[in-house]
Each structure stands twice: as structure tokens, then as C-alpha cells.
Image (cartoon, rainbow over the protein chains, first blue to last red):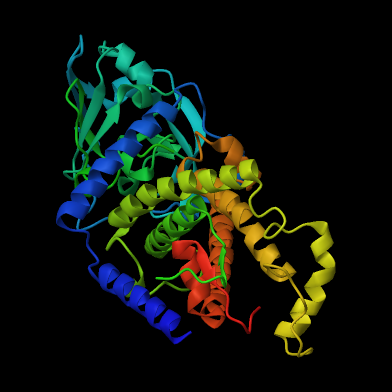
Length: 231
Length: 211
């Protein structure tokens, strides 16, 4: 019995020592990050661009007063640029250039209730409005055989998406929440909303959209979050 | 070492290997899971940082989604092995005829009766605990999938009442696992070294007192 106690004591202590080294470093971190790419592949294979997110009734929406602002690090909302805002579209597109909010609002509008799932674990049910990104991409003549979409934001945030997810019917180029124009804190004038991905994929304050075959990084992905982030 | 006649073969190799892999997987899953929990706690408390694994949410998720494969694949192998070979069907798996043995064991553990009820390899409480483990594994896996990919696996998420409730279920299944783990460790410690050693070598030295 004493021997057993010693053994488990030793095991317990070793685990403590290992976990004290809180940040995985060196080889372990490399190994985990390679494995993460394997999981990205699995998530990509499991993804179906025809599978819609579970339907959310209006009565189950998060009250607008509780619409949560997720600020991160030292990033603060950039000053309001709605007046002069243009979305710069470039890369593998037939009609690259600068698009105004008025032009985007003229396209067929899609309003949907979607769950915003944060990587931290909390979630909110929001009524979003905007144009379906697939529709916008077709409108600007994006090469639909290109592999990726990259976006850059006014706050230096950046994101990347696989084309399949970007063209999912519920991926929005979003300019409204709860039937009102986006507030500055929620990404005005225009943001991405992607109910098939974790919240960090739904980039706010976007300025630039690139259609590309080069895999883009992402603000959080480059620090260790999973790139696919599929839900 | 001489093989004395007072030794019995307890645990086949597959059982021993899957058992220890499961220990590793569970330790990683629970410790990284606590770090993930801390990012947005379900309750009014956080786990102390030193007990968690991963350093930050991103690191913890990397550990969690790595060890989940060990946990699941290893668990499936163990269950298939048990079902196919019918290993433990008589000795370890709880069956309706074990129900009558529950109360005497509870009374014994609560010190109401002093004499240990006569049992075979495992008593009915032990059988109940061991038999519940694969079901806990299934529950923790399904509720985990419901949280990991609530759109892709929305049918599973639906069973748990959606993404947000699945988090509660995942936590409860985890807590039951830890409860089992603590009880198991306690029993192993009071059963002594040779019982523990048999999970490594497969052989158990039976002391005259136990026999």
C-alpha cells in the first residue's frame, strides 16, 4: 500500500511539473501545431456547404441590449469611416476595384438569425443582415475555382477562408444587426459573418477582400488557434 | 523471478495497454479542458491556472483536440475487444443479477456491516462502476462533438438541446469521470501494490489473507 502511494505520488508530481511548464514550447508545440493541421483537414472534409446552421426562431434571439462586444488585446474600434468607406476587392476577380456601401446595399439583401459561437465558449443568437458573400463574389466576378478569400481590416486584424466556407449560403458580407446598421463596435460599416465558423473568423471593419490561391493566415490562427475553425 | 503458484492472470495485454493510454488521454483532456472552461466559465469559479494544461486557450485547444483522438480510438478498441472476446462478461460487466449485491456492499462500505460480503473477482458496486465507464465515455464524446462542431454535427447537438446545453452535459460527464477516477484510485491504493502491479504485468500475486 505504501509503495502504491509512493507511485501515485510520483506520477502526480510529474504531472504537476509538466503542467507548470504552462506554455508548450519547442518540439511539443511544433508537434501540436502539426497535429492541428490534421484536425483542420478533418474539419474541412466534414464540412458540407449545403448544410445550414440550426434554425433560430426570433423568440430565441439574444436581446439587443445584451449584444456582446468582444474586444481583444489592445485593439480598439477604428474611428468611424462610414462616409468615405470603400471595400477594396482585388486578386482573382474580373472587376477589381473599390465598392461603396451604397453599391453593396443595392444587392439582394439576406436577413438571417445565426448563432455566433466564440472560441471562448459563449454564444449569442443575432439577427444579421447583408448580402450573401457568394452573391457578392459572383457579382464582382470572383474566380470561383480560386481556393481562398483573404480579408484585411481597419484595425490591422486579418482573416482567411477556404472558398467553400466563403460561399456557404449563410456567409454574409454583413452591414446590419437587429435590422439596424452595424454599430461601430460591432464592425461598422461592413463585416464578415460566418455562422459555420468560430467567431474569430467573423472579421469586423473589413477594408480589403482578396481572392487568391495562396493560403492566407489569420490574426489568431498565426498565434495558435485552428485555421479551419469549423463549427 | 520464480513464478509462484499463488499468481493469477488478471488482465490481458490489450486491456492493460488501453487502460494506460486512457489514463494519459484523460489527464490531458481534463487538464486542458479546465483551461478551456476558464476562458468562459459555466459557473462562478475558475480552475487554478497551475492545474491546467496549455498555458492559454489556443494551447489548451491544441492539447484537447490532440488527446481526443487517443481517447476515442483507444476507447473504441477497448469496447470492441470486450464485446468480441466477451472478456469480463462474467466478472466485470454489471448484469441484473448483480442488483441484489448492491445493498450489502453499500452497507459494508458505510461500516454498517463489518463482514465483507462474499464476492468473486469484483463486487456488484465495482461492476456497476466499471460498466458505467464506456457509457460515460460515449456521453463525454458525443457532448464534446456537439460543442466542437455544432453545425456539422447539429443532429448530435440537438440530442443535448443545442450547443449551449451540450457544454453543461460535457462538464457533467467529465465530472462523473473524475468522480470514478478518484474512487478508482482510492480503491487501488487500499487494495495494495500487487493489485496495482497486475494492471502492468497482467499477473496478480494473491496473498494468503485474500485467498
